[in-house]
Length: 408
Ligand code: SF4
Image 1: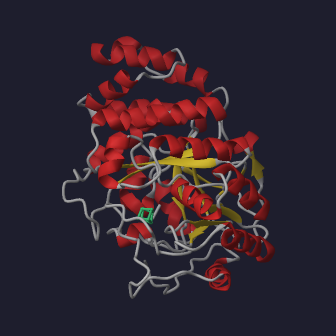
Image 2: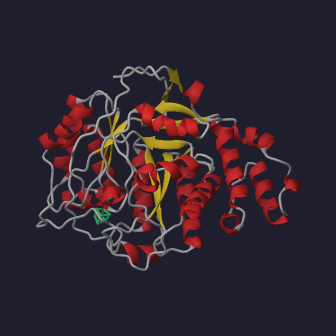
Image 3: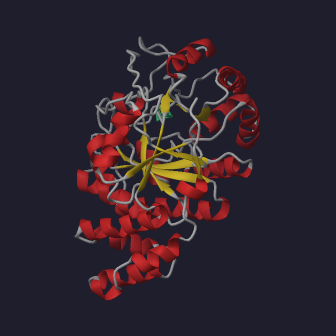
């Protein structure tokens, strides 16, 4: 396993970023009057309001919004762009829910339904063991699996791969497993942390508005439950990511309000590491009324997220969803994290993604370098870093013919 050769002091967050931003911003007078109050708010180190977020969204010139977001990103990280070396494994595609946007879930009797045993799960990791430091694992809501399956799973992963970080379970999985087990989400998370769970991904947020959720994912955890489960995780020392699925039936106001809800929890706990906005992909799903985000809209969403979320350090360009080329452009719109090498991925590919998986680090970092970024490998919790080196002894791609199927 690789050695981390630099630490947060060299490559991490610049805690004095607000003063850098103040000095990097062009004069307020150089902006059109309708943006001047927003620029002043940024200059004063204050949070943008919901109304200002909507105003930014509606501002016609995307490149101006992009430049503001890029200034925020550069004030924090300079030209550094972070990536990790990871693998997605889904433990089951059997799900008791049927979210309309989901192309991944299967009923238990479907021909291609699967539920991995612990040994099968370990077998998915073994080929990648030498080149990854994170396994990202989410899945459907299996009707029978309770906390004991996940305790066995995480303990077995930690026993065989002690250096691999386990990022697992979306909020709705936490809610479901806790219900099946007859315990609270907080107790569940405490037990799973003892078994080896290191952090939670942010899946399941969709849009944190219950009217939208009733249309696109009826029966899923409510907006308040999503926030409460992440609060529970943060309270016991489990960091989490947070997400947004946009481009279904929500309004612009509902998108910006979603950002404000995440920001409020972050003010309270500080436990979010990264925000991951991604658009709805329509293949094999059931939302004919979806609005389907355009390329400009995706980039604007990333830029506005950077500007609204002053307290969440990292904004991810999720290339499994938006592709390599749009992800590269996102690095000029406020994103600082270029997802990972991703040895294998199912969820987005079931929904229509054709993004390449199993990149070597040199294949992945080519996009960062082309965008004039400085590639920096990170660990899962953004506490250890190493600048990418072409002579990296572990720099090899692994392409395995694992069948695809996908969730949160
Ligand atoms: S998004 Fe998650 S909870 Fe919803 S149907 Fe798909 S797998 Fe099940």
